[in-house]
Image 1: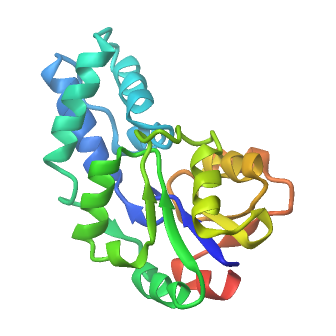
Image 2 (image 1 turned 60 degrees about the horizontal axis):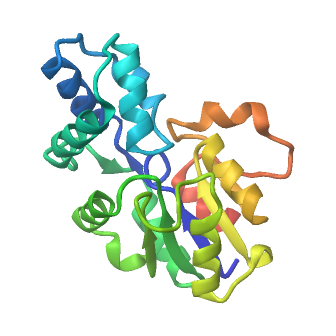
Length: 213
């Protein structure tokens, strides 16, 4: 593979607690009751607007989504790196892979917090490109971001692989025609199990990625 494109939440980082804390802070501010961390983690993957909409609905709140989204992003910005950390073995795996291929991040998280997290966790320099969900390339599973990265790297579907943890990443890779490697340890993996065909690659641990890819 000449280009390896990584999802962020649930693939490179375990961000469940910080996302849940921000969502619950929003819910409590608006008069609702906090939701379990795992419940909110199951809402992650399709961008902040859908996460906020799902969390508000689950909490039984009917609020203006535009203002709620703006407030959620403010609350999350205060919590980006409180609990969030790399999955075990991720840093070493990225260093090994960066010596053999161009690396990129393609996430539905907005660009600014994505860059802050990558920098704060000490891995920003390992990626040649970082594409967030609020850029002009659209949100996954729209393949626009993945197609943009292939064009930037001068690669095609045959020498590009998407590494992710969810059905959204699986659909993105299929839409762009690339290979897909799903990480079983990610908190979105269960969303992909009903869409597997047997053509996918799988990683049990981040340390497995250099060998698999």
